[in-house]
Length: 115
Image (cartoon, rainbow, N blue to C red; front, side, top):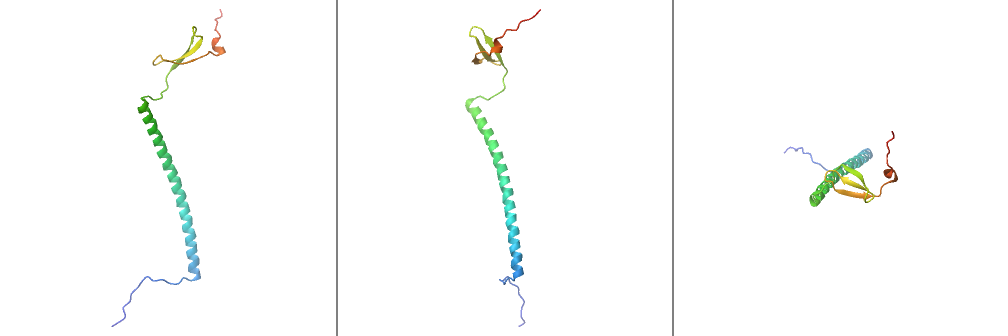
């Protein structure tokens, strides 16, 4: 019977040059891991920020549904109430009086027309 050739993966001793090359490979791979980890953290932070933004929008909508109100820019007008001697802030959309305060000195000055 003739010898039959075969190949197997087996352990072999490494020489000094091969050991140094493996050390360089480890150093390079460790740098790759560090870079990938940094990218992953940036990506996670970005996703976390996006999630937080959407969650804030959800909470705002939930509050509006619960209170059946939302904040809107509404035209208002300050008028002087002579009986109360107060400045009154009135919403122009509903005519609701929403704030009352003492007038500032410049608001008490009467403008006079000169002929």
